[in-house]
Image (cartoon, rainbow, N blue to C red; front, side, top):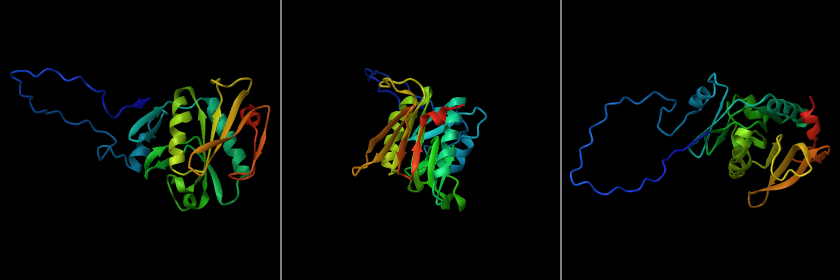
Length: 224
């Protein structure tokens, strides 16, 4: 659910001859997670995401995006991808899931899978700075379709993250004869825009060289 930060335009009303004076409000503001209005601190972000509802609370350009807990299939694919990437990653990199990523130096999003530099995490970093991220992966869910396909890739490109992958596990427009899941791999070009490098459907596999040598095999990810 996307929470809008501004209301829709309201049509102007005709002036009233004798406007009534609006009384001052005596209401007490409700307690919330924002110590500073419009600014969410790291600890407040953690607190918000520790709620018992299992939801994921993310902030993009000041808008709060709340997603329900991922499905079992979603988590299975994410966990297997993390394990396969970890097996191939060089020593200086590590693979994490469910970890916060800063955007514009502020609390941002929680990608499904990330390949990041190991040293900052070893040194105690609680969240990931985009400069440490080499790859971000989003597994598309019905509740996050527009965010995962359109909004997040734009923000990841703006942050300079060199590689982005999108995993489609449900039927989608343009799927054609491809069997699910389908993995789309992108890389930043010289204009800092993501360009599609590979579209890998179940039943096929591709050997990649970036961000490190890795064999993309969608069937292996979904096999239960």
